[in-house]
Length: 527
Image (cartoon, rainbow, N blue to C red; front, side):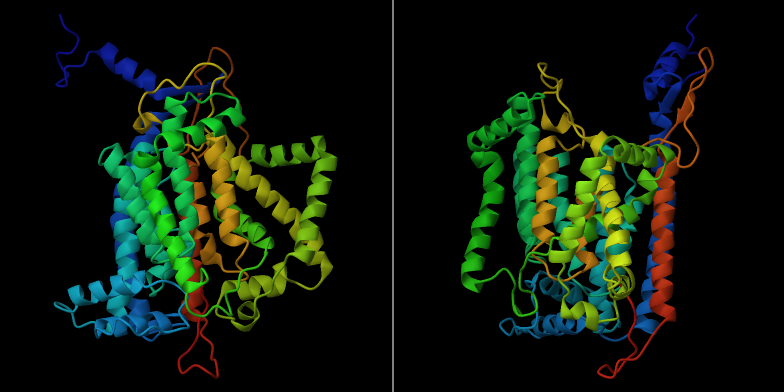
């Protein structure tokens, strides 16, 4: 008789056992992961939590917009007034204080004409709704969900949707939300190829170009995405191996060979951007005096420090801290030179923008005044140099296990880019670091929202470790069932970590208003 008489799916008991065994990954003697269970748990957590989050964001949005800040807040004065000019069909008057292109204002104009038909909300609320819709609908469902389906144990969309530096701007009319959405969607098209290879690449180039209408520096991230688009095909067609220099040459050759199909969609953006630079004579639109480029190397340390803080659930473990201590023990002289280099960078390449010291409506004002830029050498060098050193170590080492590696001789066992995992190679990893540096170093202002894209592009390619957060990982004795570990706890911790930070920042925003002589309404603190 058949063993599947009670199984409507037609599977035998042996088939079910094989499926369970295939979902179990042995990562070391006595240690295993149940990948199927992790994926199912991830899907369940996202499905259950997402509606709750949407309701929470909607309620807080209504409260903040109608009760707490029903008036123009900081830079909204410029963004809203410019959009109102567009709403009044005044398309040729431009406020010279605005430094970013008009992408947000066009989107706001469109949103206003849609919502004014069936709502009596104020113009300010309707315009702010642009970012709320982007943050709680478009970002998690359109942008992050397809990437999650390709790497369900890497991250949760509900978590990245709640990234604290982003959620701040769900309630305000700023450029950051949609700038991030369009450039991440460009990456999404490259990795998931939803419309076939050729069409998806062209859509990626188009969305990257659109993102530059919200933030000019996205032209730099366009280059990063182009590198990923090229390398995911070159790795297969040119047979990447463990010889790293050869892979760079193969990438370059493939870029020339496939210029029209891969490079051209992004190259057009660079041609258009070059025309813009000639016309504007600067990357900054409008007020150039307060946004002049320079060499602000400490920005990299600030960025890595923020990423280390927000990614605490990903790296916090005894083993990770032990690895950092071991590096100091094994490479004492190298670490000492690195610390000296960081101190010299702090001394000679720290820029203090007038806005930073004059505007106490940002957390960076207090961070810089009391800790980062504290005039006492004990804080500025003895404390911060080791902190920056650890942050650099964290940024690199958390991503390192997720790097795509190659065999010295054998080619990759896949034939299509869509079959490749969502991982960076040594080439795109280098491109990520270079793009982060090129984006941040010229900026004189210590501004956390500049770290949104460096974080997202780093986090999407990190696959969460399964190590225990606090306890020591001890393999099961031989002859006993293996110890099962997973990334679910860390991913849950990451979600709760972001939620706690968001609650804290919202409470500070609501509970600690203060007056400015030059402003009619109470001022508050945001990122």
